[in-house]
Length: 224
Image 1 (cartoon, one colour):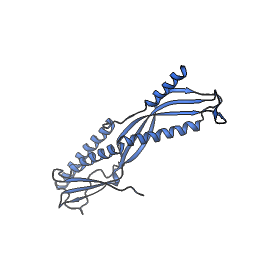
Image 2 (cartoon, rainbow, N blue to C red):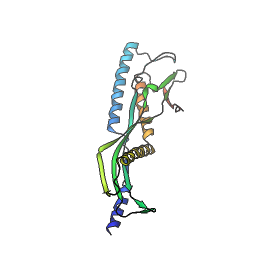
Image 3 (cartoon, rainbow, N blue to C red):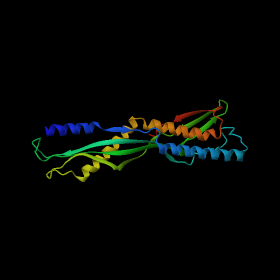
Image 4 (cartoon, rainbow, N blue to C red):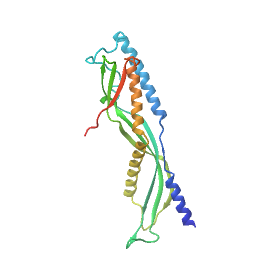
């Protein structure tokens, strides 16, 4: 009865794996707002200096303000990942009683995605009033385990089969990779791209009249 209850508990714990994607994460919103404010300031300064005239041709060099940003996170995802680490001694393929070691635990993993703004290329088709913006591939910039979120659901260790540090290290690497896959599967990269486009629209709006000009975003092909 006790073994069945414990087994049910393990199943419930494993099934509790959740992924929490915060589309409008406060940190990202604050970054976007800050950049838009800076874009407005840069736009006003540019208009004063240039007499309020927008760029007139493709050959004219115009700096919008985002060129020196570099890599920037535009979306973050938080994933709660479960891991089961277990080992036992076997004889002729059969588990030897009292040699089983097993740990079931979870961590929250923060996965951040964005792009390198310095790699953005753009041009203006004055005849058709189109601003073409070529974006680099959105990619995962970082993935970190939040050690404060560590939770243990089950632990059982046999003195005959201790869990090695190398096993734990490999388990954490797998946990991070799973978090990346889960975040991507739940729209991390798409949201990061959408937020980047929102930021860029704010910059271009300070130099060009977006009621007149249409912005076309094109994703550059990944380098092979």
